[in-house]
Image (cartoon, one colour):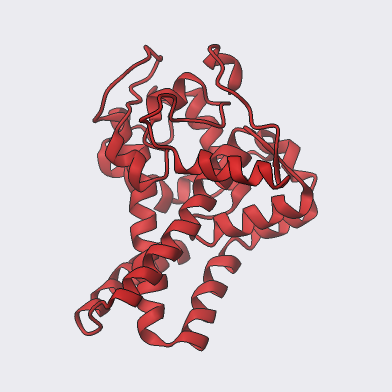
Length: 262
């Protein structure tokens, strides 16, 4: 109930823009908080915790989980466990968010709000449950998101809170969720994967590379999802920079054997 209430309230909060119109500074703030948290979703939730496509030290690992959870998309271990299940059952009857099986709205947001998937099998992410700090953060998944909003309200005021937190978070929700819904319905298929994953340049742009979804389902363990020079993959570019700094290590290359990477 709490998750549904928060989701409803933050969407209602977007209406505050009627009384607080944007300025260039507010739009820039919203773009920044969207971008840094989208990187947390794509590099953290997805490419690190779900697919182990690169390595992090323990401190950086915790920081990445915190950044990812500032998006308000529940715990990193919860996210990864369910995402791994999605890959095992992709677009089949047991897929937890296939638009082909249960419709667009279920794939987009219904499964997240449903109580059906509040729990997860810890054995699915056993390599991470050994870290007590990750278990604590996963259990208290709301802390990074709420603390971000509270700090913005206290130190920056209403207008930056509205644009940099409320509106940014709602945009972040739906752009992320489009990968579960639209990226299995609209786009092109370079690889004949056993699902309906598709590449979509527009989704790739707003999700920093996640829209190359057919590429990803072909080789889930690859840290890079945009294979061609023109397939923009901002997340991978940022991870390359982090690797030069010694923070991210062993970025995994593309594998032709996609079934061995789940």
